[in-house]
Image (tube, rainbow, N blue to C red; front, side, top):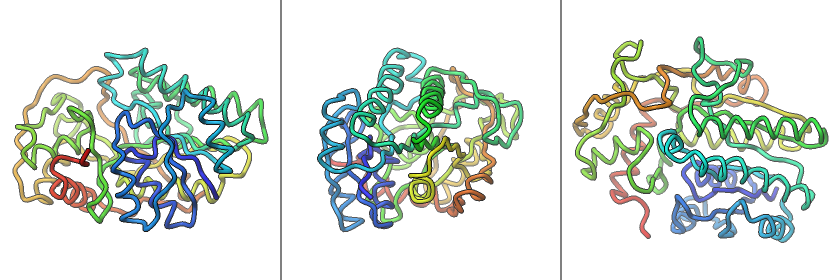
Length: 337
């Protein structure tokens, strides 16, 4: 199966390409390298033994998308491309709506013209807003507390309406919880540009000496230690979820929605302590004010994905922190230019 992977050079996209290749699928990467580097392509080949085709392009470029889909006989799309930082979205809402919402609409319009009727969308647990209870099932009401979450929710609503009008399409919405870790070879990992917005790359950069300390946003949440609680999932487990979804229901018409998480919640300080054990390094941190748009706790009920797809997260917190440290210690400055 030839699959267009938008944002395939990014953190989750690159890991998914490796798992796709191992499953006998053929990813074609479409990425504008806004938050990634072309050297990732060689790392994918080093790990998988196969170098995917790569098209340097923006998902808002409809003509290039159509040309790419036709040239490579694309049968399905996995759509990762987009901006993804909660804090940045509060400061730059228009950029988030343009990239994430408009970009997806252009992509789906291009798919329609190219005759491709299957897409897996990289959504997020942020679409649940501030949930009344945990764990979170797919039937929970949706809302959002920040522009990043709004952009994901708006795309979900657009795709839902589109699928109703086009019942022969297969649209899969995968709602991720918090991806962490790296490929167990240490060759691929999370390499954010500038100051990291996510917890684990920030912790690992402190451990490797790139940053002086970790800022812990909020210490007065109603949680066991006052810090935010999240469902952290190993990026390879997350990648496997895409492969299974593509294999099981990629061509099955309808709208399909799944949580991808572990079902376990860990606080920020839990993660810091686990990383200290994995790395043998002390992680200095400072407790600072809450960050706009953040919530107290959020973790998944992943039972629907297990029931329908046969998918379950296998990797432990120790695996997540060990692999994160392996990546960062082997690549202290991230990917080379």
